[in-house]
Amino acid sequence: MEKSLELANMTRVQQFVLLGLSSSPGIRDALFAIFLTLYMLTLLENTLIIYLICSHRELHKPMYFFLGNLSGLKMCYVSVTMPSLLAGLWNGIYHIFFVACMTQLFFFIVLVGTECILLASMGYDRYVAICHPLHYPLLMRPQVCLGLAMTSWLGGLVVSLAKTTCIATLSYCGPNVINHFFCDVAPLLDLSCTHVALTELVDFVSAIVILWGCLILTMTSYVAIGRAVLRMPSAAARYKAFSTCASHLVVVGIFYSVTIFIYARPSHMEAMDLNKMLSVIYTVVTPMCNPVIYCLRNKEVQAAFYKTLHWS
Picture 1 (cartoon, rainbow, N blue to C red):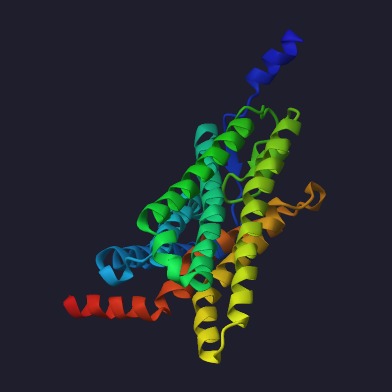
Picture 2 (tube, rainbow, N blue to C red):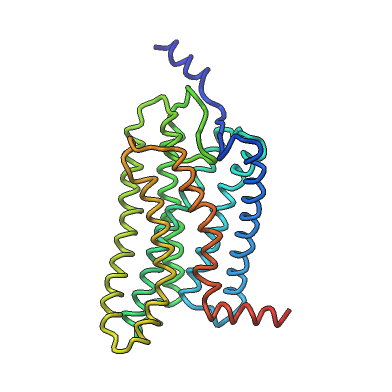
């Protein structure tokens, strides 16, 4: 028994090898240029949105407050996952130390949990605006908005602490090759050489509470919104109400369809190459597209943008 423990300690994995998106040098060079451009564009777009919301009083509204939080979250997304993706494309494979891997995993889970709660908060904001417009200034006063935003970030933090602690305390004494471009939950559980039942239970419970719980709350808000819209007397009023929700519904649909497929399906359906492609959607593509979907098509944001250009 003692000898086996000593052997496990001696062979404990000190670093992981991330295989990245591609092993072909020609393809890697092209992908590196593409993803570096997407990274810089994402940071620029979301920084612009945050600047416009902070610098223009007409955008100091609950909806834009949450959009500002979402833009900050998307900047964090790409900053957590993109460096290892780019390093893998540059070098072919990317070696990451155990502590760095767990740190990346921690921040990634924080962001996923935060986005779930934040999207539910944004659904509630639209519900109050459409179903209880006279009470909107009271129900969505600044203190409430700040409380919802803080709950989103703290909720993601608590979930991440529990999940990352469980995963970090597992033993990794065998293969250290991860077929992914960042440290994600499923690939790490596959590499563990110890019993992972408790970790899988924590993962399952957190998925039920955060992922499915927030999705149910969001959908409940939109069922109520749909009923209220159908009762509106004019087509113009129905169109205006729907247009304020359409962007949020698109982002909710993309986020939950990808996230549920990756994290809430049976383990025997694992397909890491497919997981990598889907992970690119919500860690790279949606952070870049969100400002366009949410804000840059919005007339108030466009007016603030043109005003900023005029001042400069």
